[in-house]
Length: 190
Image (cartoon, rainbow, N blue to C red; front, side, top):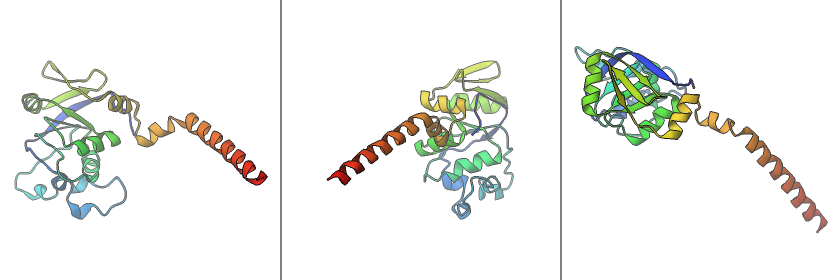
């Protein structure tokens, strides 16, 4: 996973609330086992609507309760594969939010008014280190869990966090092997 520091660029606006994961990534496309290749199926049913336009910009601004519905991780995979690096919305479904942070897709919660202003600006910058979204000469602060922020800044997914404990794991395994040998010796002596 790549580290995230600043995401800047054009903004795509999806002015819809309560967008669920089945709308983001319909069920018929969940048969793939890889994490890639889902972008082409993003909002598959909506993409057939006349006038549908969803440019693959770095920042997606969406409505309230984005990512509600089932816990499918394919939805964040599809959004990231399509080209989005950050999603800004007034609120997210909890599991969707967590699934995004685990793959390096930055979810940012801002007020409805700030989301609309960012969308209207057409471009922005999200600074994870400073926890600010900047657009039109404004800087709007956002909150993010300290540990999630640390992981994203360092580019650590769950496996990377585990590998960061390599020395502790090796020490534990070594101690466990010694304990097992000692226990085996006691059993043999009996």
